[in-house]
Length: 195
Length: 195
DNA sequence: CCTACCATGTAAGACGTTACATGATTGG
DNA sequence: CCAATCATGTAACGTCTTACATGGTAGG
Image (tube, rainbow over the protein chains, first blue to last red):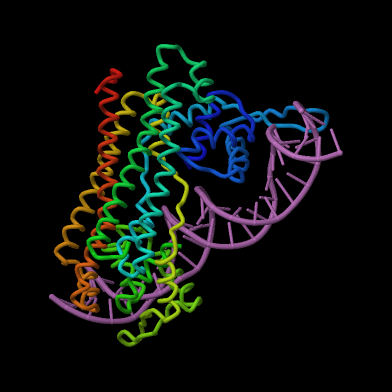
């Protein structure tokens, strides 16, 4: 259900086409909530059917069209209701924990590669999120610029602070995962696993 | 796909019925990977069809039966292949980050409640995982006892160490989430949100 | 006899992934 | 004219959740 609200968050900044949403998704909210193209278009249609957004058919060249979507008052209301409602948490489902808990079944080499891979994965994520955090702090991302342009200057700091908070959650997460996997590697050393 | 390997991990310890798996799931792997009853029975049937496990029909009383499943050599091989293969990581999908990043849209009271709820949620998880970590360290959980009984004593420490490692991942995660949300509350204070 | 527990599912729908599929326009 | 980019989807499949549905047995 969060895809809907991720899309509404972007559309509330200004009207966009499915294609634009798809691109900006990857470059902004996509860091927080990934969604493939094939999910965005159908979801937009569903949201339109539910009256949350309205698409305006626009001509492009001679034959092509594009649908420019904008948020309706009902959509705005729905978004705010979601923001004001408590979040429902999904039960944990952590493949890495599951694997770690039974790691004695893996070959020593595979065990070490698992932990190294874990570090590599989260380091990659961390790099991206830290870079995005930098860009947000510098108010340098296109979406953020567009968004700040629509609100009074005295609110800018607040908006940036919350955006930072969102990314910091992921940065913290990645750092924790890396530190844990490094402790795991130390454990393998202690257990005499070949390095 | 991890459900399959969570079930195999349990069945490798000893043969069990769907019902036993369901109960022990909640009390052991369920902490690492939640699955509802309605998913376990069909998955067991699929695994049997794939030749990974075999079910033995047992009589219970006069009319009732139960299926006791045990792992086949093919199932064992499949499990070890999974343990030795690199883990594929899913893209991030963090509703809490998403919400935090747009928290200026929430009412001040709702913003604070969101962060307090986040702390409450992860504190609840943390309590459970820490308790389980204690039980694992004391080698006091039924599944672990059953498991240790099947392997040579010199391997016990190793098995316990990995089990601890798995739970520590979740403990670390919960602590990080709590610390983050507390920083978020401090931010709200700084922004002059009513408390 | 009755209650708690043992035991096993189905059905509908939401959500997500991967792969496939097509065509127009703009700028060089 | 060709490549990059704009633009919009469908199809098939798998996963997960929620709710519904049924009956037997063991122990007091």
